Image (cartoon, rainbow, N blue to C red):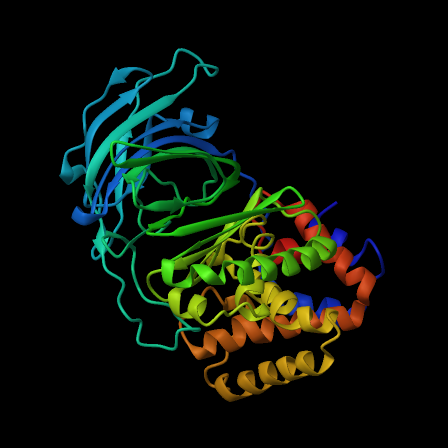
Length: 439
């Protein structure tokens, strides 16, 4: 049974008015939810922040869909030089720079490597690359309000901090492909690093810190942050909670861990088991508010002020389910931010009995939508992809949140939240679009 049947027909019959609202959101041509076979990466990375340098190797276990092709194409940062390529133990020619397609201006370069034929469909296909280079795109003020758009950077390695993300292409990357990872990371001993998944080991020898991480749940990308963190950890119901804060803010760790427990207690009751083995609050060296698989990256200004409110920390925790466990192809429309905003920014206060605060939030959402979504600029919620302006915020976050509020009012508590949980049960590990929610 499709997700929409799970959501809107398992518990009750859908009223025509609700179905009408939903159909207004849908694309013209229904699309199937995309569940992809993940690629496994064995990454060995060495970072030297003082020189912006990265040296790495990636051993890739290609999926059947990639093994069926006569070549493999991936994206790599243009400032990274490939030193060696092996396929099943055989050295392959390194593509000439002219053979790499780099759309200007871009931090992406498409590399295509012809592959020798395999002996059979069951033969493993293991590609190993070593590479090195520098990544130094210093964060720049976006020019807008911080809550609308954080500072701009496609990735940075420097004395002030390390930030490597999906836009950095700091290892061979495929778009619209899920991956699992084993990461071994080396960096100066006074630095600590945080990424997705579980930290297996953390040792210091010869003034270098080596950490090993295992990312078992498929993910769209691997994000890594490093700095002079003070790390504090605590267990809660089998989940490792942690803070990675600058020394000046390390005293705030208990406040953030306590707030994290409060949110996880509520949302695991509401949505089901937390998808990951850890959740960490990480302080960033530039303004940001990012919800990533198993951690959130918040700017130092937010951390310093102790912002643990639902619209900040709570919002990023809800992304653990929607966006980081159930994936959303943003090119086809972004439903994740609206549902996350509804459950965190609004519903948390209502569920806690703060009815006046919940009412104020709902009123503010409607007010800002009316203020910024002028008739000649407004667009359908299904056309929202990501936030660049107050208009995008008013439509993609606030209006879409109120659409989910309308559905809850029409369907009732039990049916609505059974539906929300069905999105998680049906959609974990897959890409869901508006049409998949509507079908």
